[in-house]
Amino acid sequence: MKNTIFLFGLLLVFGSSSWMDEGAPLQMGLLKYRGGGDWYANPTALPNLAAFCNQQLGTNFDLEYAEVEVGSADLFNYAFIHMTGHGNVVFSDAEADNLRNYLMAGGFLHIDDNYGIDPYVRVAMKQVFPELEFTELPFEHEIYHQKYEFKRGLPKIHKHDDKSPQGFGLFWEGRLVCFYSYECDLGDGWEDPEVHNDPPDVRLQALQMGANIIQFAFEQ
Image 1 (tube, rainbow, N blue to C red):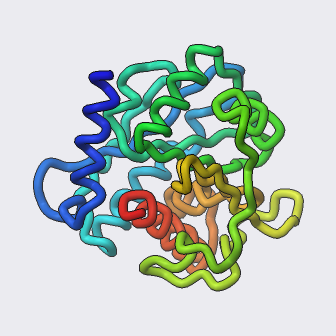
Image 2 (image 1 turned 90 degrees about the vertical axis):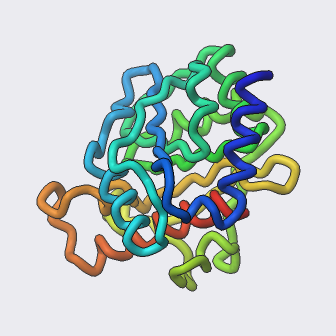
């Protein structure tokens, strides 16, 4: 109960324009999970996204992110959690329950398919919300029309299986609590330029879409 109340307190602040004001820096969280998947992939992604949001949205994010375990009470200290990887994802019942409580209390999870996580993360999130299904968001959804316009949804950053990128969501009581970017690989586009050598225009699209996710998550 204490953690839930604390998260609600954070979101009362983040839900207003004050989340863009100067003051104590906010911090993004990176979800640490079990199963063998590389949850730690793309180590330069979140710092670069934080810097971009600070420059373009007027936010005050700490450029260092926190590593947060799925089952930890510390999860409730972060209003935005990012999850990525290429492989297996395993949640215990207690971990799934903790993540569920976090999301129901007002938290937000962005899952980014770094190629290979899809079959595992769908099973894991079904543990979290057995009653919900991932729904593909239409191009008209507000997440694609924040500061930056993406009239055709997610940009294609990496080839993967050469499929069109898709954005899926889990909705709890009408609120988008989890956004899943599939066949897109935003995180690779957020990484340092020399890591993946993406063209500047592609990297910019990735950062702009990331900023849209951040803006939507804090203002919805």
